[in-house]
Amino acid sequence: MATPARVRFPAAVFLDRDGTLIEDRHYLADPAGVAILPGVPEALGRLRAAGTRLFLFTNQSGVGRGYFTLADVAAVNDRMVELFGLGADPFTAVCIAPERPDEPSVYRKPSPRFITEMLARHALDPTAAWMIGDAPSDWEAGIAAGIRAAAIVADPAADRHRARREELGVAAHPGLLDWLRAVVR
Ligand SMILES: [Mg+2]
Image 1 (cartoon, protein in one colour):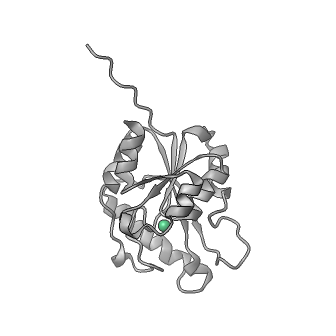
Image 2 (cartoon, rainbow, N blue to C red):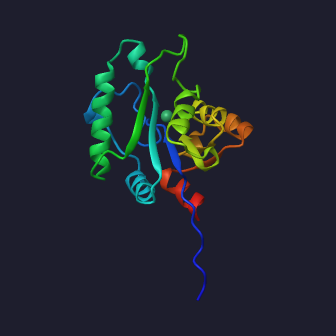
């Protein structure tokens, strides 16, 4: 009998929200506008079943700009979790970074601070942790934290950040489930 392939799931995955888990509708503040991207619930369900810790890490400068409030962001997040259909909230912790790009950054990506704090708090192996997102600031935050980074590029014809991604050596996947299949293959 063939030996089953050893599959090593990540210890932790840090997930961007807009353009990674849900459709990127700029400055989304209305829960009715949440649209889950294909394959996301299945990927999250598989990760959670494998014991991978999931973290949501989202820049929301609309808060700092006064367009909407942290409560609005939380309502959108709640709707997203509801639409995952996975039952309980799958996230170990959530970081909503409210800063505007022109003000001093605390948690706003590319700051790696949330990632490094969570790695320390939960004693996670950085080499088994990933930051997944669709923007350079996502990959830069992951790399600055010493973890691995992957890119979601749903439409290769609209791949605006290709040069930067290649410079950083970050691989692109059409969606979260494609990334997971590549990692645990
Ligand atoms: Mg994004």
